Length: 148
Image (tube, rainbow, N blue to C red; front, side, top):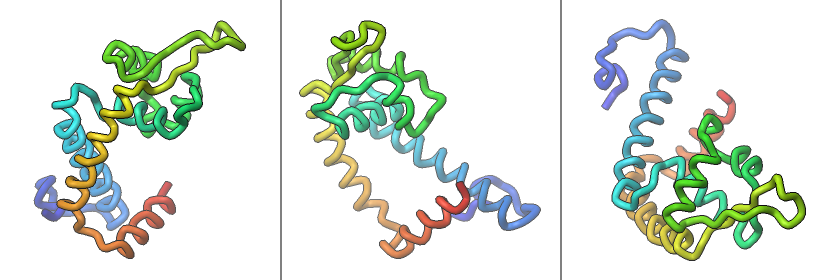
């Protein structure tokens, strides 16, 4: 669907404005799809992001600052997200042996197993939504990087 139809807006002041609105609209569409995909597993997209970050460093533990720096949404409250994941048994949190003011966080086996399950879901979702060819995706990535 064209952005004009989706947003019920016929005119944009310029193509750059239309591109910006299109990016925001598309990002929100993907975010809502991700919410729907993760809801049956009892986690949010932000919690999913934290789990993926921790899996990427596994078995090395991370502190909250390192997790926050790597998050997609830097406005998320990493402390709150980690606590919710800990209560679900998906991460473990312990005071650092080196500095008692620091907390070390690692993903649990339950968290790793959930990510394996979600990885399979991602492959299925990705295969259904392959509207872009590999070269188109490369071009889009370069354009988005240029805009940032």
